[in-house]
Length: 348
Ligand SMILES: *Cc1c(COP(=O)(O)O)cnc(C)c1O
Image (tube, rainbow, N blue to C red; front, side, top):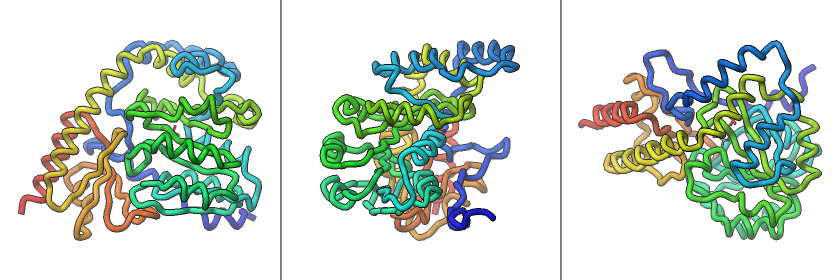
């Protein structure tokens, strides 16, 4: 018999996958291909796929430790952040433990918390404008808090002072998902040394443009937590090809920073142009996507899909009132196509 909790867990919604002629602005991926060095590393690694990768993944961890200037022993790995979240839930949550997840945010936290039969505490903060003093109070009995900064889908970064306030008083662990942090102006990484109860999650899926290869990692000062997470993850959770691509990507930071600058310029341009449209309100973003509120239940994502552009309809996400779409910042040609489609939709 399948466990009864499985029946009430909603399947993760990964959106519509694009047909070949559709412009995909719905999954917050990096729209640019990997640099030549990463492609060369992948081609070389193809010849090694008869072998298991070394499960210690030492070279990858050293690369990450140099990238972030943190100690190798504070790093744990996973098959993307999704896998890290799953392992964190398995490692830290007993059934009936309370877990706090401010909403609206990423639904994967809820999914794997439920799988542990934990008790969910889901306070709503409109547009993720978290009141940290209040959050500290209402989560004081929780074992774990999941935060996301910049948050998906609202795009805002959390205040470091707010996180400090919470970390000072909170007895459990605070997970901060920083999947988009390279596009943002601040990171909680500098709090790691002071607060052993903070766990930061990072990925190669966004800034490093390797969503298809599945590499995630986390950082925590508490060595008990890091060693537990390194123990419970699948020993070969990162494939031989992904491992070599990840190591190479960390040596191409200049390439990725140039791409980031392009994406940030396009983000500001899209923000400005979308702000001018009467029926849409766009929220400032610290990530590579924009949250847009749509007036009058226009079913904007369907109208855009008819024009071969995919955006994510996030209407109905707990804590978002009314129609909202999340739009990934694409390449200039893709963003132009989006703006033209919006012009066409709102021409009357
Ligand atoms: C895209 C995204 C991730 C990345 O997940 P991976 O499993 O590493 O691809 C993590 N968290 C949030 C909030 C995201 O939007």
